[in-house]
Image (cartoon, rainbow, N blue to C red; front, side, top):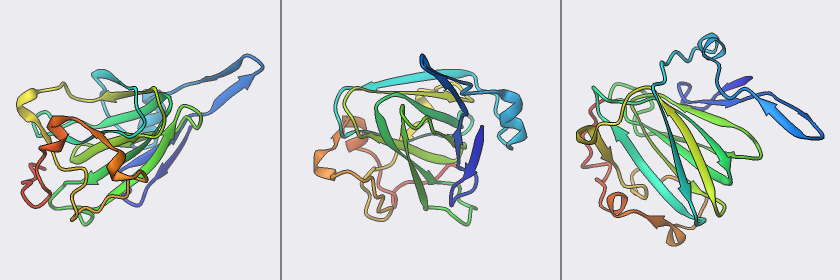
Length: 183
């Protein structure tokens, strides 16, 4: 397993080693011991999965406030996404900065997003399945979101914004300026 820090070093890309032959491949997508050795110490308690039929489906920027803040380990089962993490930790030198990575079923890359970050993704292909582990349970009262297209964040999603399919919840999200970080 290869672990690489992004420009915000707490966000990491994890590339599992694939062992392949004529039948396909096998890979270990999560191993608590290997993750701990890489400095990722989470007790994942829940697995989630989303399906997006259309290219340009955007989900985010989401967070859960403490006491239900979540770290996430995200991977793509089919299709491809651009995954984005925004640092929402008030005391962080990278507060308000973002990183992104392309995750696909083909490249097998995963992203680890610690608690204290906003998280979102946009699909690059039809019929995209995304799976992610979280280290805390969902709590509706702690759920929040920030506008994916906020000009202060100026996130480059790599997709034409006019082609985005966005939920009502995400279209009504707070601006970055109105957001009061609980982290």
